[in-house]
Amino acid sequence: MRDAVRLSLGEGSTILFMVGDITKQDTDAIVNAANSSLMGGGGVDGAIHRAGGAAILDACKQIVAERGPLPAGQAVSTTGGKLPAGFVIHTVGPVWHGGSQQEPQALASCYRESLRVADQLQLVSVAFPSISTGVYGYPVTKAAPVAVGTCAENLPQCRRVREVRFILFDEQTFDAYVGAAEKLLHETGQAKSRYSIEKIQI
Ligand code: AR6
Image 1 (cartoon, rainbow, N blue to C red):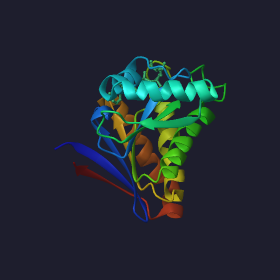
Image 2: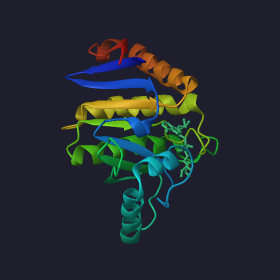
Image 3: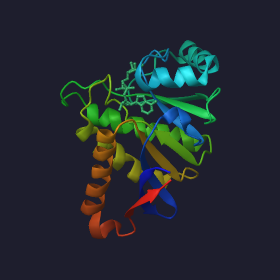
């Protein structure tokens, strides 16, 4: 059993926050914080390719051969290979340059586009890592409200996707995301009275 936090958005849409390893998740898809080459790398990208096996890289090569490198903010899907999740949705987060180069817009686009791809695949549950807050240097306290706010806005509009899980690698990242969820709940107040947040064991 693990401590987790659940943000309910009403009408069956939920966002779950927990510390963990995304490669172990049994959601319908997991999202990869990739780079534009889609050829793998370090961090969560390296972990996903290692755990999922060569089928993921083969599919990435085919995508790049067809459409070229993937720009920041866009998302594509491949098989999940040997992962418990059936699909990997690869998205490219922005590199942090201080915040004046449209980084929040690009980061929001990663979450929006990944949800759109998942919905097109008719998936119900999707796990996200904390995109851009590792190698790409996006401060986690700035990234968390963008990530949570974008998912809270777009998840209820999905036709099929009902559950987003944020799988955060360490306690500090988890705290930043839960803090962003609590702030969102507080700020939306009356307007979104159907929102609620609770601690659960999973
Ligand atoms: N499960 C969940 N989260 C993880 C895992 C895991 N197994 N491993 C790391 N994290 P990063 P970025 C967390 O650097 O900043 C790669 O080389 C990590 O602690 O993986 O978007 C790509 O190829 C951090 O909180 O992604 C790109 O070149 C978060 O995942 C570049 O890094 C994101 O850290 C992308 O950088």
